[in-house]
Amino acid sequence: MQLRGVRLHWLKLPLVRPFTTSFKVQTEREALLVEVAAEFDDGRTVTGWGECVALPDPSYSPEYADSCAVVIERFLLPRLRGDDVIAETVGHRLHRVKGNRMAKAALEMAVLDAQLRHAGRSFASYAGAVVDRVPSGVSVGIHDSVGELLDAVSGYLAEGYVRIKLKIQPGFDIEPVRAVRKLIGDDVPLQVDANAAYTLVDAPHLRRLDEFGLLLIEQPLGDEDMRQHAALARQMATPMCLDESIDSAEAAADAIALGAAAVINIKAGRVGGYLEAIRIHDIARANGIAVWCGGMLETGVGRAANAALAALPGFTLPGDISASDRFYREDITEPFVIDDGHIAVPQTPGISAAPDPDRLAACRVAVRDLPLG
Ligand code: OSB
Ligand code: MG
Image (cartoon, rainbow, N blue to C red; front, side, top):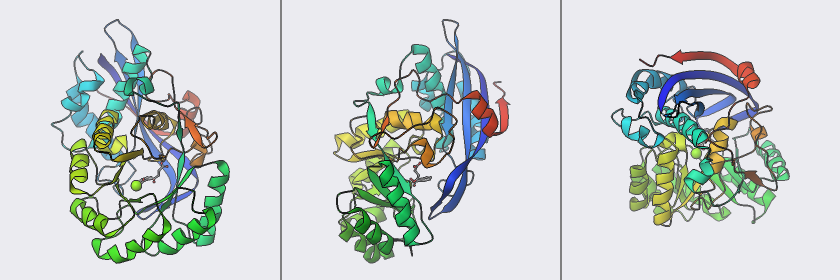
């Protein structure tokens, strides 16, 4: 294919309620979408969509939405000139640009979307999905009081979510987890995510989480602290799961070899794209390491892709793939709904769900057509 047009859309969607993590309070999602027009050898031009998962500031990752926009325009697009662009070689063509994986992922996703739409093939079929619906977990933010947290968790359980993930931070950890475990009983899968808020000196404190029968503890230590995570894993019974630390298949292989990860949270954006995400799935599966699909408050555009990725056989734990209304009163695509604790795997051609033009226009705060050179 040949890229004939690339357009960036900056959107703002209000959240149904604030989402607080150890690093930030979010009250709205500032989303960045990549739209490509791809012309194929048969003369057909097909539109593809990608969602960039970067946040508006470098609080979760070094990348942020505007850095991604600049990198896409200045450094990535010039490497995708010519008529021989295919999704499977985008990663290779962009390899000399270091890092910037969220920017790369968004562009590769848009190219792959166009390619699959042109071929009339769903991403689920392309990637090797083995189920047509995936269990739906919910990520619950930090609350001002344990009482408010319990109300939130009760509400999500009533909606059918099959797994609860609690955000924790120093000062909001042992007692909230104890209270939630007591509320939900021993049978509901429960896990925690610290978003890198602790250090290894907190090991004795974090060990107190072992009594709650958690599925896993996600990224307690810093992004670069692979060896420290391995040390902490040896001191805890709760399985160690990495998120921020895993930015590539190589990092996943290292984490597994080091004993730093018994479980991996896979986010395609964080690792440079859905194709790298599949490679991490394959490495983990070959090593008997469980993976699950993380989320970044995606709009329906990216949520569609996550639901299909999570249908691969190694995704043996429920993902952060909630219904659209977990975050948005109105999504920009057909909303994803929770049915009997599950989200349906999209079977339509492409990897993304295309945004509704009216919703796109209503949520858009900026748009830019990028020069193709
Ligand atoms: O650490 O998994 C995380 C959201 C933004 C940034 C980081 C994380 C999260 C979540 C939300 O936990 C997951 C979701 O989209 O449901
Ligand atoms: Mg996380």
